Length: 188
Image (cartoon, rainbow, N blue to C red; front, side, top):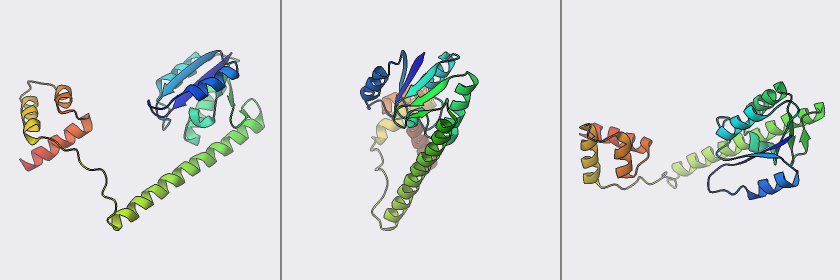
């Protein structure tokens, strides 16, 4: 059975192009998710690995849809190999049922990871230079009504509302809420 895996990095991105490729390749079952590929903790990826059986073939548009790091990619491929499941990357034309295909996949994955790490390194260096020149100051802090924060904070500390409810009322993420709490408690 041909099983397709489609992934985009954010919920705003569209999977239609990859789904069309899967249809054209006669994929019988499709797993789709909109989540970063930075690690392998992805629900649909796990579901697909659990679903596949001996003799199945996993098909992806590009190996980068399956994993971003060489280590993760090779770990996934090892799991598939243990289940006697093949892997085909349409864009790069890799077929891991051959020794050459597996070798080329490993080389290309390593090069892609190097490119990604180099890009991130350049980005960090560029930000550091911009900071030195006074041109980069980071994100502007969220403006917040101090009185509203204090009222919600007081209710939360008194145990009248949960932290989740406080976050909803203030329209803050958990990390921002707790950072604001620490800042508030330091100054008061």
